[in-house]
Amino acid sequence: MAQFFILFCAVVTFALMACDPRPTELKQTASAWDQTIHPSQQDQQTSKDSTAS
Image (cartoon, rainbow, N blue to C red; front, side):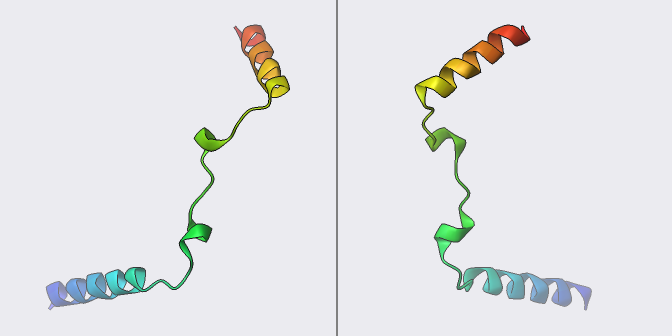
């Protein structure tokens, strides 16, 4: 009986996740790899790195 309940929960969870009506753009977080660093910010970062070591 417990196995059927677990299977039922798995099927319901999968169905709800598959039918999620929200657009995919809202779910994706911005990646730090895609951001471009302004040259002045890059200079500040390198000076912070050199003072930290």
